[in-house]
Every structure is written in structure tokens, then in C-alpha cells.
Length: 379
Image 1 (cartoon, rainbow, N blue to C red):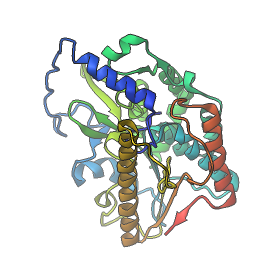
Image 2: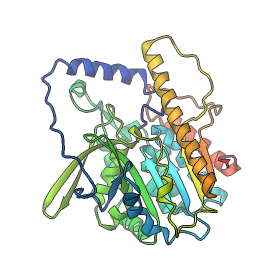
Image 3: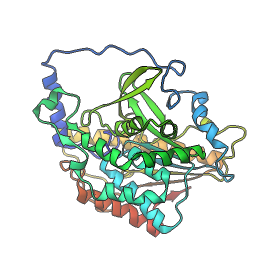
């Protein structure tokens, strides 16, 4: 449930200082170089049943999406994209629950999620019956349910925090019965995609979560959710293992937000001769502010670095939003986007990560805007 440094307001001075100390201390230790893995292609990928890469061409995207398109509504696809944002995911969770309460939340043909969005996405995919899960996770949990601070030796390891509590939380809310329901919905023609970043190849993997659930690969499903939320440096990379033909394959994955703020499916994945797009609708939930109020930045290296990272992330998110809006306009789809109102008056303390007080306020903000009908900016 991480927030990538390219979209969150700031990581927190304490965390940056610890990270910088880790870098300095690790420079004094003996360095062990990892061997470079062989390049993975569609032809040699043992996981090709379940994933493709964001930089793949149309043939790989269509292999996973096109078979499902025949069951999409005659009025065009209904798509939901959920961004990263760490604890700011409480906004997206509240927005979905409030949308349900308003009574006009649709069933989605395709749901995509990255980072905290990847933790929300399976429950959004399964519909309003799972709103209680979103409420519980984002209003009744706090930092201790997500992570544990490692002691001093963390500076010599792969992360500052241990996310075993997050793994246990994911397992609790995705029992076999839930994953069987995901598989059933997938078989009916609906798609659920989650993005992670493969550490060694530096490529974005797009995971076909419905296919994974259908194959009974429940541990892989849960590990992908955790990996998509593994903020580099703060949360440890996640080892994804898969057994095929008596062989065990293993890869190391981190936060999908390293590559993108949300998964905007490229136009070629939709535009096939037999697919009707006109009348469809793309909804994007940005679990952050897109247009923040001006703020005074302290003239210090850390403050300036934080502001620069934040600005870069927002620029990236806005670029994706604008590109998706242009695609929707060209092909006759409606487009709606929402983000946290910078004037909502919700105070964020970067030294108090995953504060229940902060997340409850954001959840309420999302719920109230959805119920009042002021959630979306439409085009």
C-alpha cells in the first residue's frame, strides 16, 4: 500500500534521512553484485499465461484483453483505473463506497490498479458487495497493520520496513472463496489488471489477475498485490515464484508506480474491428491531489528534493490523464477523473505514516463527494 516518490506529497524527512544514511553505510560494506538475468520475451516467459509487459506490442495486449471484449456491453466498455498513493488510497476507497450509496455506481468491464490502487482493485472489480472490506481496511487499520519498522540492521538490508503484516492482511481478505469469485467474474468476460515493476529487467509487468485466480494460483495473486505496493527503499521487494513443468521460476518485483501513476490501457488494446467503443466510459481515481494549493518550500536540500519529486509525479499523472482524455474523445468514450481536493483541509504528517486519523478523514472526503454528486470532472 505504498506511495511512490513520484506522486505522493513527500516521503517524510525522517525516512529520507534514514535512506541517505543507509546509502552511506552500505558504501562501507563488501559489495555483492547480482548476476544479470536472461531477457524475458513472450516466447520464453513461463508466466505468459498470466502477464505481459507494458511495453509489449498489440499482439500481447490483445491476447489477454481481446478474448474478453466480446462480452462487453453493447454500449461500450466501462473501465475503472485506480492510481497509487499510499494511505491516500483511503480517498479512493471512500469514493467507491459513497458512489455505491448514491446508487449509480456501474459494474466495470475492466479494472486496473497500481500500488494502493492494486489493493483496492480486486474489491472494486467484485462490486458493491465488497464495500465493507474497503471500509474496514482504510478506516479501521493503521501503520501496525501494514508494516513494522526494522531495527538498525535495516540499513544493510533491502528496506526500512517489514511488510509481513500487509501480507497477512491481504491473505485475510482474499480467502479461496473470494478468489474463486474473481475467477468466476473473469470467466464471464471481465478483466482485472495489476501492475508491478520487475527489479532486474526494469520493466512493468501487467498481470491478468482473473486468469491467475482461475488457475488456482492464489499465492501468486496475493504476492502480486503486495509487490505492486512495495515502495523501493521503504518496503522490501517481493519474490514472485511460480512452478511449471516441475521447475520453479522466481522474479523480484517492486511498486508498479515506478513506471506509471495509473494504468491507462493503450488505444490499440481497444481498437479492433469488431469492438464497439462509442458510448463507453473511462473512470480514473487519482489517490492524490492533482492541482495542489501553493505552499512555501523551505530552502533546504531535503525540502527542495521532496518538492521536486512531488512536482515530477504530478506532472506525470496529469500527462497520463490528458492522454487518456484525448483517447476517449477520439473514440467516443466518456471520460471522468477525480482526485483529492487540495482545499479539503486534511492535514498530512509525513512522520506519521498510515495514520488512522488521516485515512479516516480522506475516506470521509471521498464518500461525501461521491454521495453529493461532486466527485467527478467529466468530459
